[in-house]
Image 1: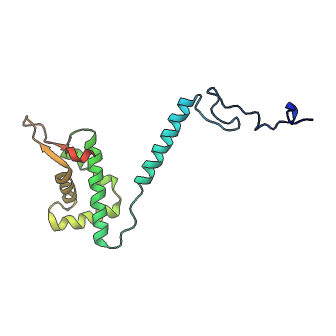
Image 2: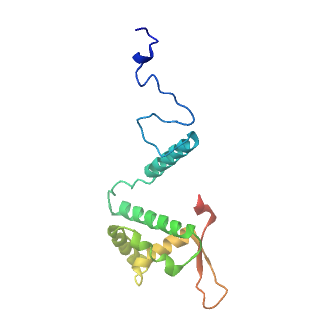
Length: 154
């Protein structure tokens, strides 16, 4: 048996990668061609970037750090809500439901110092003042709308 004997070749030596079969034969992929495979790879890399950049903050060291993180989270949630379009104030009050209970407690304590009558809404008002503009409605029955500021898109 010589070195060029076809019976002596291992399965790895006989694999040919072509545009019709861009993957190894013992692996599974939903991609049927090289373009689809590249698209899937791009989606995977995008997912990894999002997971890495959206990791939660480290645990706060003190009350001030916790308050700062809670304010950042509510501000982020307000931006996400307004990214889909202008919203009425009543539609934005639901952002507290997304935040963890410990953040709501910290924001409520902080809010008591600013607005004793509406402690839970103080953080929302502060976030809205930072990232949104109030657009007055033309009709008397329509509520005012909050619109995301230009710089908040980036």
